[in-house]
Length: 174
Length: 393
Image (cartoon, rainbow over all chains, first blue to last red; front, side):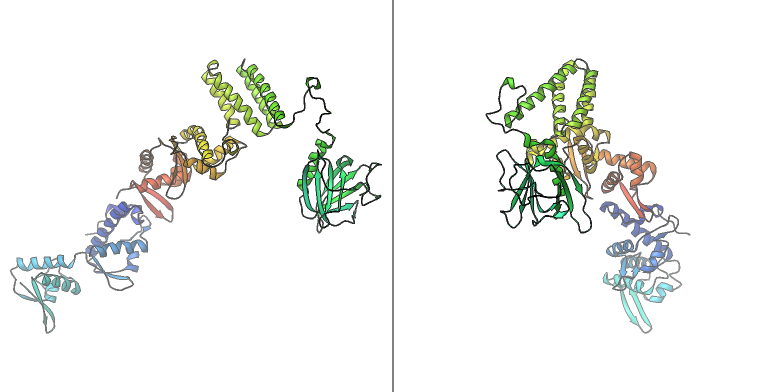
């Protein structure tokens, strides 16, 4: 299944940061959703700003337009404000992209647990992300840091408890 | 140099000073005169030279001795000079610094410039020959038998103006017998005035004609009035508001604003309701002809539009560009038309839009920016330039 570009992607003004405040807000919203859906489609969890500029998301070769470095920073900052992005360094050159926020992931995992009647059971993290049982689930193949974040979110809600095991971490759902 | 006599440097009763120039050295023919550098004074009667240090040392020479004079351009290390060729001195001449001279000409060497102006004034005086004028006194008979009286003082000026007015009045009433004849007449009067008289007087005539037209409006058809008025206008504003007629400061600007309001209405309508201030400036000054406006006065007058409730407005765009626009010229309409054009073409640059509307690029860009500001357009700023698109966001 190939990625479906939104209509804005072939609209040249999309690649110029609009000076009009209202227009810019809509433009940024469109950029955020495009960036997130692109990452989701390609299952990307981290982004490098320099690389991002050359990636097809921000560089439409067909209409010969690309988003400037500053504009990309603005888009990323917007994503950060919405809680979908976290910088990995102070220079803001690499970032984590969370096309689903930890709470959302946690909810998905907890739903799966409840559906299969596995409350009060203990899982290793590996089991959750790479085990046979979770095959076909959205969170299958989730990177460990993300998985841990989601479980931590569940823990604050009192729906799970992360426990240390001899060869790593495990989790118990309530 | 032997034409000069010693002088006390004071002017006679009827004599007036025309021009004075410092740093002038006298030459007896080709030789430097024994005097130092001094000031040369030109009066209506005499050429006077005075030593710069020793004010007592002052010599003069009547202008009537001058045959002709010429300029000698400056060269390397040489000041510009005026060579003055002279008649022999009168036998009963007062004594001067030179008893005799082998030359029949002198030179004025201008160390500190000023020769151009001096030359001009000297030429003027030599043609007017005011030294020949007899002083107006009891000796000259005054009365109707004297024929044309000499006009002196304010009364004289008034009399002259009156005479002139009568003449133009006569011309006008004759001319009104036939408008086509009037056209010829006026153009004749104008050409004559153009060449002979000061521009101010020309304006005066056009004003009096304009007034006459107003008075006799009933006698001639509207069409003809318009034709005649446009004829006058192409010559200039009939009665320009000037600092002389309306003083300085606010009052002047107020009057100016009113006049601008009248004259800009038509051109503005022709140009779609908006003109850049530069364009207005050119147009106004072209119409005024001689009484030119300064940019500052124009801006100040334009600022008065609103308080005077004139149908014009001075508008300053965000970019600082100033335009004069008709009040009726609505912004919404302007934006709508910009949006229409852009939607029609898909996208437009300011240049393309200008071509489409026949506007200046500057103004068309302002319109596009305005439409963008209102959220109707959005921009694509790329290496190819700034293009505007309909706002699809």
